[in-house]
Amino acid sequence: MRHRILLLDSDRDALSTLGGFLTSHGYEVLEASSSREMDDILAKAEVDAVVLDLMRPGEPGLAICSRLRGRALAPGVIVLSAAAEEADIVVGLEIGADDYVTKPYRARELLARLRAVLRRRQETVHLTSAYDRSESYRFDGWRLNTATHQLFDPRDRSVDLSPTEFKLLQVLVSKAQEVVARRDLAPAETGEEARARDFQINVAMSRLRRKLARAEGGARLIRTVRHAGYLFTVPVERVPAS
Image (cartoon, rainbow, N blue to C red; front, side, top):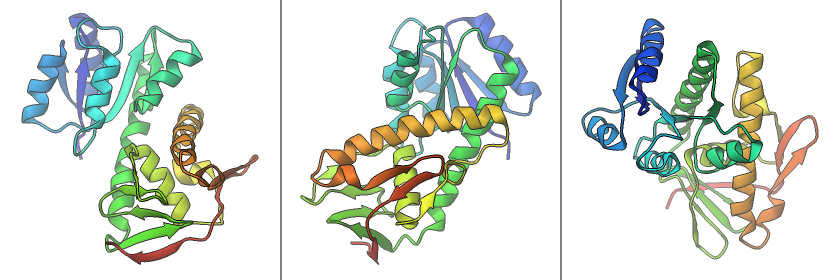
């Protein structure tokens, strides 16, 4: 399958250079120099991933990333930025980006990151379809509905989860009281991808734990097992989805 990639950057030369490089590697590339152009494109076509420059003028890149995450079939999102401090990277990933690439970057490095994001997105789609949509999970008063991608706390309040957070929780819940390694949460083919994956999982897991911790008892549901992975600590019951 030929993946469709949308590039968003106000620098036309940068768009042309990166677009030509990705096209030469078999991708269908769409280009936009503003968020309005991006919206026009997305109104007509679905894309598998968006590569956007955070520092471009106009609508803030973080706001664009948040909007993309709200789409029914959210594309993978890679943000580009000259801001290279770890705090900046964490903010970019916190608002839902799948990866954060600092400028200047090597084109082949970006290509490797893009391939990893596309592979994880495809795995998430396959994972969701592989689960029995007639089932939900119950644990310690919580409910996780696989059909609707909804999580409810013990007081029956809905907990908003990003696609990545939902995938992490779904895998952990399905393997409750077993240690799950990072490679089983998100496989990586190269050392570069593995380093990026580990950082992204750490950030996503931190977000997920904070959301769980807002309800009584939620903080103890996921435990880090040093040098091994993560453990979902309580028993889980599979029940028909309501």
